[in-house]
Amino acid sequence: MKEKALDQIKRYPGFFPMAVLCLFLLYTPLIIVMIYSFNDSPSITRWGGFSLRWYEDVFFGLEATKLRKAAWNSVTIATMAAICATVIATAAAVGMVRSAAWRGKTASFAILSLPIMVPEIVTAVATLIFFSTIGFKAGYATILIAHIVFCIPFAYLPIAARLEGIDSNYEQAALDLYASRWQAFKRVLLPLLAPGIISGFLLAFIISLDDFIITNFVKGAGIETLPTAIFGAIRQGIKPNIMAISTLMLLVSILFVTVSYFVGRMGETKK
Amino acid sequence: MTGSDQANVAVAANSLFKNYGSVEALKDVSLSINDNEFFTLLGPSGCGKTTLLRIIAGFEAITAGTLFLHGKNIADLPANKRPVNTVFQNYSLFPHMTVADNVGFGLEMQGKDKQHIKQRAGEMLELVQLGEYADRKPSQLSGGQQQRVALARALAPQPEVLLLDEPLSALDLKLRKAMRIELKQIQENAGITFIFVTHDQEEALTMSDRIAVMSQGELQQLGTATDIYQEPKNKFVADFIGESNLIASTVLGADNNSIQCKLTDNVSITTPNTLGAAPGDQGELCIRPERIRLSNSGESASLEGVVDSVMYLGTDTQVVLKLDDKQSISVRTQNADNNRAVVEVGQRVGLHIDESSCRFLAG
Image (cartoon, rainbow over all chains, first blue to last red; front, side, top):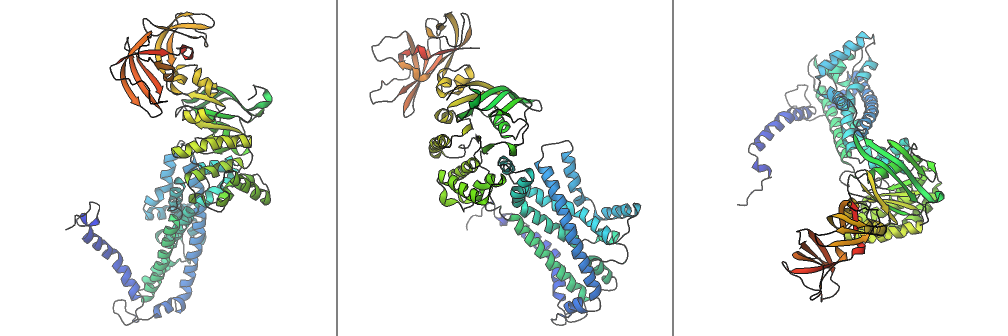
């Protein structure tokens, strides 16, 4: 028998059954939802043959107008929130990573990334109280503002990580070659930082797209995003069209996360 | 090199100080660098040579002092307004641009027209023999080629002064030696002042018109390669440049031209009095190992020692001897032919010191 190398995965006892258990618990419900979204029967548990009727229902059925409106809100809010959060996060990352040590730098970093750790329900309640205290009318604008704010740390992390890997000598070389600070940023730092920025943008977009808790608190009456619309629909009983719409959202998320991952790695292997 | 005529001074620094918090990186450094000069800042790491270079480039502000470039005060000019370019230690070529775009970057930022940029970038790449590589990315070039691109990029905007921050340190020995000659030729052809930072004394000695030796933020000595090697002003320079035997000594007698220094209890050495020593001064005697000759058999010598170790080094052999007062002294003999006198450990040998080459360093 060949001796197994110390770093082989088989040398870690229990890894395989544990991994199988975790993967099973994580992915079985998702896979079942995906499969049953193609179910011909209106039951959510009994298989009645393959059909695309629930997808048709999502796009053209009774609730289609409502869902389309909610989806439009979700996409526009996610796009704008991700753009704003990415711009702010890029500026923050350049300031934080490129500056020499200053009083409060560590504290600033903690404050920047803290929202990821704060329970979302706390942020949601606090944001709601804040908006009602200053007399801001709940609606599209409050959702957008709340989304911009909680997306910033998610956009910040990949941008800052990328920036830390870029030698500051590049910007100095640009300055040395008569570039203004803005030109040095635009012509040298920005192209090098682009994979991090795109990655941050996609992450922020996805986080905003499927946020439920905060949105539900600050949205007010009469406006829905896709997650709140799905939640509303489920309260009247689970229909298979929910499975179809969930499957669609899942695909969008997978697509974005995958793109984000590959863009983030761009250029790194070539170095 | 003409004298200190004001018109010929490229960079003039007066009483420069630089503090990082409580750390003094530069202490009262004053020097002037002439036009078309290959000027080297030499010293061990942490001596302040890179700080001085970065101050000239505009990446660091000075704490106190003045800095002039061709008579113009540049102390408060930002880096992008100084007609000075840098070749960085790790080259820092822009990885997302082609070689030609890298070389043309400075001209582009100066707002030169496209035709001019293309032509000049082409010329510069020809100068460094990389004409065919214009469309490659820097990552597709070897270390030595990247180094040349960095040089071409820095030279393209025709700076008044070119700064080089240990540009050869990342290359292997053979390439480094070839680049020394090439750098010197490029400097002479381009007619631009080069300020070169290195910790490698051999690099400094072979290329430089003048060398500034620095240590602990202070300028130790400024002079030609011959000056600093043959006339070291203090113990640091004597020790840092080349090898030297530094032997504790006292001045026994002195006049304007020469001094007598104690070597051992019975032997004294007469050396030129270049640094104004007076009788009774304590200090060290600097004797270069290659300026000591071992006696041939049958030859009498006033100084003798016992061989402690013999090391064969290819071009020469290093012999370490113990003098009668147990002081160690190192001798280098050129292996110029096969008939060199072979000495063995434990053997007693006579020594002949070229006294006029020795220097007494007070302190």
